Every structure is written in structure tokens, then in C-alpha cells.
Length: 488
Image (cartoon, rainbow, N blue to C red):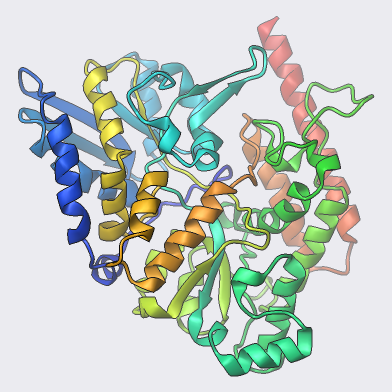
């Protein structure tokens, strides 16, 4: 998992496909869309080549490619899938050489700016951008140019995978536990009612102290791939977004810098980048809460809760709920957990951290119009509905959510999943930094937080975050100095 949208190689399990069985309802509707686009057939055989990474993108493209080919006689969609660790290198090698090998390429938030010079702008494309949930789309699919105060759409997200609460309904729908929790904490047990993170700490304490589960709400405390940063920012985002002095009225912060920095340039600040915000009271309170939540898990020096092992821990009942990406639903279902036993809810306060995978058109493609039609096709509400019903991926199309949520054939537990994801995607403003030194910043923050969680008495949260903020400034000063020297 990489910093900037937590770029996990999402997997879609056969369990999801088995659990989500209501696929017939959209087939007829998709047929209507096919009829709309079927008149635009190429005059001669064409191969549309898409470069991507293995996992969810490949499964999604395998499904949509067949449908696209059926309505475009003579078109073959070829999917070149590489391991996640290699796909960007392969794409860049081709793009930098100016070769037309790939018509469509894949990227994630932290690699968007690297690929941007080689991509076709989509602002005026036939893709219905107004139907996309914009926080998820703009986090990685839009490049902001501060010098011109303009934004350029460089790619479109085929689905959303934001951070939310995944919970076991057997616990949270239990009337006895609900009453016991209310009597003790004077709050509702229902995750949809959690309006701040203190309640999440109370829930963890309740389940552990009453010996209901071994651990509390499962929170990632692993440094692998930025897991612990995801946990910190999932909490910290609540404080940042609710502090207008800090965010300056911009809930996602300055584009490129995100919520880890001030949302404006304070008076007297002399650097060309905004000051770090993580060492303010927002960051301190977030780190304190993270440490409390981790205290209801094994000490991370002995056992770490991660993106990868959370589904197994959840399925085995180690914790009543988990804070993680929506893509983990498929992995939990793969553990033979009944879908009726899983509920989803937005994070406290309804905001969320965005995650993303994006498809873009190479400016060297010999089939730009056809590639644009393919992007239009995958973003259509009908195909977006199919990706949920057949693959368990959550749409980015607002129309798809409306159609699914008003469909009487969709079971209530799936509507719960959809509603939680819709809210999380609508308020996915907890943006992480997306600048060339993102990985350096992430390593500094993740290492410091992990050291503190392993040895919470060695330093105060304020001391820890002051050191990180100072390191951020040094990293950015070096970057801007080298950039200025290069351009001059």
C-alpha cells in the first residue's frame, strides 16, 4: 500500500460474486445503453490496449472489455496487467519513449502527476464528469495548477474505496448490548450515530472490558505500506475538517498538500509551501485517540493489525468492528462471513479518506476517440451498477447509487453498504499529500507514529509531532531548493 490514496492491490473475491447475486436487474438497462453506443463502430478491426495492474482493475476490465467488444464489432480490448510493483515502470517506459503501445493507462493518486505530461486532458471529453462523486474523482484524477488557478482532469476513477467503519451486526444490532452500552456510556452503540472518535474509544473499552471480544475496534498499527498513517489520518481528519482556523475553509486543504498542512498561507510564513498542521492540537488529539484505540489491541511490538490481516481478525471475531477501506469487504466475505452479518457506516462525522485507481488516455494513442468512448462506457450508470452487483466494487456514479438504492430487489444489507459508501465518497475530503516528496513525508510520519505506539511513554504526542513537522519543513525546503536550482 502506497501513500496517497493507500494504493492497495484490491482483490475481488468469488465470495462477493456469490454473495451479490442480483445481477439480472441491470442487464436490461445496460442493453439500452449498448443500443445507444452501438452505432459508433470502427470501420476496420482495432485493438484497444489497456495497461493496468493485477487485482480489482483487471477483474473490472475483464468484465467491461467483453461488453464493450460486443457492442463494437471489430474492436478487441487487450488488457496488459502487471504486478502492482511493476505496472507504473512499464507504463512510464512506454510513455516516455512516445510509443503508442498503450491506449489507456492506469494510475493511483501518488503517480498521477508523474504520468500527467503524457495524458490526454478529459475536461471536455464525452465522459459525464458531472455524474462522478467529485471528492473521490478529484483526489487523484485532477491536477491543480496554482499558477493558472485551473484544474485539469487527467483520469477517471472507475469505483470508490474510501475508509469507513466495517462492523459485525450481531454485536451492534443486539438489544441487550445496546442497552448495556447506553447505561454505561450514555451513547448509542450504533456506528451510524458515532459523531466523534471518543465514542469509538468507548466502544473498544466496552467490548474488551466486558470480555465480549478479545480486541476493540480494529485499527491498523502496521508500518507496511502506510497502514498506520491511514489510521492516524482517519482520526486526524475529523479534527482538521472541523477546525476552520486550521483548514481556512477548505476541508481538504491546499491541493497537493492536503490535510497534513494548513489550508492557507498564514501571515508571516515565508516558505513557498504551507506550514505543517499535524503538530497542532488537531494532530495531538488524533494521536492520543489512536494510542488509546491501539491499547485495546496487542502491543504492536508483538503483533500488528494491518490492511492484510484485518479481514481474518474480523471474521474470527477478534474485534467487533474495523476502521478500514471499503475494498476490505470483499476479503471479509472471502472468509465465509455471511453478508447479512456485515454492516458499513461512515467514519464519525461522515467525512472520509479517499482512495483511488484511475484510468487515463495516452496522448500517443492512435485510437483516442475509441479510448474516450471506453472511458465513457465504464463510467455509465449501467456499467457502474454492474460492477457492484457482479464484482462488489462500489460505484463512483451518483446515478448508479440512486438506481441501486431505489431498486426493490436489492437486499437491505447491500443498501446499507451502498449508503455508507455514498456518504463516505461525498465527504471524502481527508486528502493526503500528493507532491513529489510524498513518500518521504509518509515515511517520516509513519516511523514517528509507530515508535510512539510501541513506546507511548517515551515522548508526548506533542513532542512526536513537533519533530515530524520539523522534518516536513526540512524535506520541503530541500525539495523547493533543488527545484529552483534545476529550473534556473
